[in-house]
Image 1 (cartoon, helix red, strand yellow):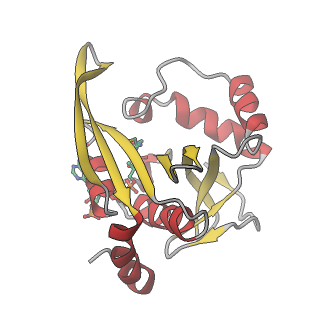
Image 2 (cartoon, rainbow, N blue to C red):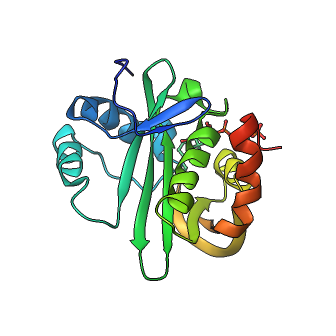
Amino acid sequence: MTDKNSNLIFLVGHKVVLRPFSRADIPTLTCWINDPDVREFIGSVLPQTEKQEEEWFNKLGSNDQNIVLGVETKDGVLIGSMGIHQINWRDRICTTGALIGEKDYWGKGYGTDAKMLLLDYIFNTLNLNKVCSAVIVYNKRSLHYSLHCGYKVEGRRKNHVFRKGRYWTLIELGLFKEDWLSIWKNYKKTGKIK
Ligand SMILES: CC(C)(COP(=O)(O)OP(=O)(O)OC[C@H]1O[C@@H](n2cnc3c(N)ncnc32)[C@H](O)[C@@H]1OP(=O)(O)O)[C@@H](O)C(=O)NCCC(=O)NCCS
């Protein structure tokens, strides 16, 4: 856990700020990505060295298809990351990925606040029109918070992901700007979805 009270701020929400990563964050990122409790929910299955994380870090900002931001609590604790990926500027579509790496912070609304902030940036600054995401069927927390933020189930890829000795369905989610704006109007004011 990084407790750095960084002055680096990019987006400000109710519970978190989103900010660019810095080189000093690499050891924390390496811990999260290797943690079995975190890995079971995301795409990463191979061990990641600090050097590999550094190479990933060095590529951040090198193209206009991916944007990754760190999630920090208001009192300066780095707890996770939020990513915008595969940005297609012609179709105005992208995918999002989320990771709260500090497990003590799961289920306390930090992910929702970070995601709503990211969606505001995606829709109201980058002017994208649709956001996609995918959740392994056993990731109930992620499915719940995604639906909470306005994503809708668009389809199910049967037996698409191999984990824990068997195949699992991948749930494909989509969210259109026009459907999200009313959720945002209330969230922006109150910090609550409903
Ligand atoms: C998924 C993740 C980003 C969500 O962030 P978070 O801060 O934990 O989520 P929030 O607290 O904002 O929202 C979680 C919601 O799910 C609910 N929830 C928590 N555990 C749950 C469970 N086991 N089953 C169903 N719902 C659950 C919470 O009650 C909350 O809903 P509410 O706001 O209606 O009460 C975070 O948990 C995480 O990074 N997990 C590990 C990696 C991961 O799964 N990444 C996403 C891959 S698709």
